[in-house]
Length: 638
Image (cartoon, rainbow, N blue to C red):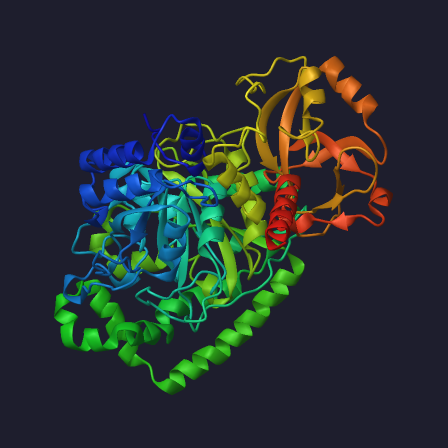
């Protein structure tokens, strides 16, 4: 039995434990889609035979090194998937791609299973989800309410538990608005971080492939798997991730700059989200929102509409009558602007970018409503352009200002509809935003998608924003070797007894390592795998006895995070363990990637003198495995 909303960690654990197979998951997904009350979610589905064959092929292969092994996902139908038509929600435009988009290839190589292609606002032009001849997907909480767009079907497919994640695109907010309207996480990466080769463009300068998922961990893991410089994509780029301070300063508009178009519930929930951010220790700084508002208005009201026209101009000139009337009207606005207009608009945008940069010198990230309000399908039909423009108040500027963003759920209105907020920061802060978004999402309390009463997992790190998190996901999806995880190591029950204490281990005490027997002898029980926050370094220490690492916190450092295991011990066993730890090691407080704190093994900084920095491996086991592989290769060469 699958949970109401799918998540990668749950599926991976079920695969590892043998409770599920890819075939069983695919069969359940097919049944869910067939039983769905919303027929507008999908444009094209793979055949049952094709899906089962893909699942069986995976089952015949080892999942090792494939972090998305057996995970079903959806693809917005302006992104190419070989073997399925690409329509961009316009039947007259449809074509059959010979190859898949670069991001799809990366995900499939990681073991994910494409289920089909999802509906969208035609040519990704809209934030409402109603501009499609294939129908208008609805919010999973109210069939009268819009799903948001343009990545409408992708969001609804995840929120209904038909897939574990979905790809969308985001030019003006299309990967964030539908997340907010369906109680999901929506990741809009830094421009160029994910290749757009094989994506039907909306505005090529601004387009991003986005990710919808139940948690920030899932969305960030998918983003890390899918990202990578693509020399065949002229807009692809690479860059190092940038950290944010631990107590990041959060910018919010001054009260007079906020606009909710009379929606008091949205205003209330936004204020509550800001209060939660402050409660998590983040200084709240009021900003001048005027430059952001002006840039947002320019995306649809200025010369950038001409770039939308440029994306599909030959088709539009010959087939405007075959297009959605509202989309055709918007593309037609592009003819109003001259080349001189475009340059004047770019000059003004440069001034606005400079103003935005000054704001980001004073704050680390913005916290904004994802959308100021929501509407019914009927309301959008009556006023399709003006109401759509309102929805982009807090999203349209993000790509123009070269920012990364993550949208997270932020509670429910009195009428039962969800509300969301978005964290925004300059380019290449994707990892850091995932951690902030995770904390804010978790603090909100309600579960993902339509499973609003399913609480967020309290014991698992959600912010899978670093390579070590992907390694942890691979470990969950891969049956552990006997030497690495002995059968006689018991696992922690769901509710630990009050007299037991948790401790994080990172080296010789890990399951299967030389000193793990000491933990077991003291009554230790393995609780779970986890990853530290980004500001930890790991060193291979010199000395007698079993090889062991030293974990050192370095504030301001932005690393991959270090894989650890959380064990629980009886109070007396915990005391005996601490007493036996030799210097320069000791037990202190570790911060995990999800923001939680736990007692754990740390090393005095002076103890790392002359030690090898092995942080890049992401953990002790990975370092040992790399050494074993090198030794084997050297032996084979003799």
